Length: 280
Image 1 (tube, rainbow, N blue to C red):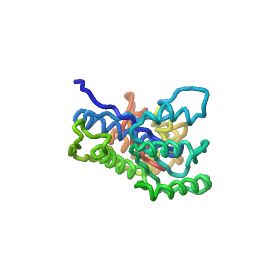
Image 2: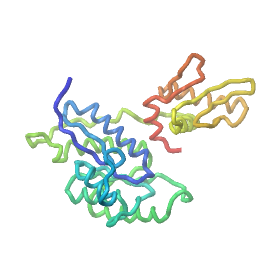
Image 3: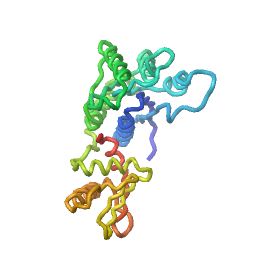
C-alpha cells in the first residue's frame, strides 16, 4: 500500500579505504527504511558522488560535487581509517571539505574513525598523519565515534542513526514534537563461522560472479573460488576443513547450491552483506 513520506538525502563522505563501511551504511539505511519508513513517514536515501553526480565542466570536480550532491543532503555520515583522501583547493581532502561545508551549513553530521589494526607496510604514513590531524581538530568541535571492527561499526551506526532520527529537530514531526520510538537492534550480524569459512566467503565476494566450485576427481578434491584452488594440499584432513567451511556457508544461507550435483554454489544477498563486514 502506498503512503506519503518525507525523503531525506544522506551523504556518505569517505576516502577509498573504507569501502566496506560505505556498504554497511547503505545496508543499515535500507534496513531502517524497511522497518520504520511507514510508521515514521520518512525515507532515507543514501547518496554520494559516485552515484549522484554527472559530468560537468567549468569548475573543479569537488565544486561540482558540492553543487550537485552535497548541498542537497540533509544528513552526512563521514568515515575514516588510514587515508584522508585527495587534497582540494582549500581542504585536506574532498571528504574533509564535504564534512566541513555540511557542518557550516548547520546540518547534522555523524563522524566515525576506525581503530582497526593495519599493517604499516600497506599504508601511507603521511595519509595516516593527516587523518590524525583532522581527528584532533574535531575533538573540541563535537562528538565523534570510534570502532574496532566492521561488526562494531554496524552495531554502533545502526543504533546511533535511530537516535539521530528520533532526536534531531530536522526529523521532528509536523507538529514540532518528537515521538518516542523503540530503538531496535540490527537484524544482520556476522555469524560465528570458522576462519576457513570466512576466507571462502570473502574470496567468493571478490569474484565477479560470486561463485564457488566444488570438484571431486581422481586426483583429489578442489574448491575453486575467485580464480584459484583454495585447497593447497591433497591431505584429507586439510580437504575436510574446507568442505566443512563450505557446509557452514550453505547452512547459514550465505551461499546457495545450484544444479543437481552439488558442485556449483553462488553467494546469496545475505552472503554479500556479511562478506562486506569481514576483514581478513
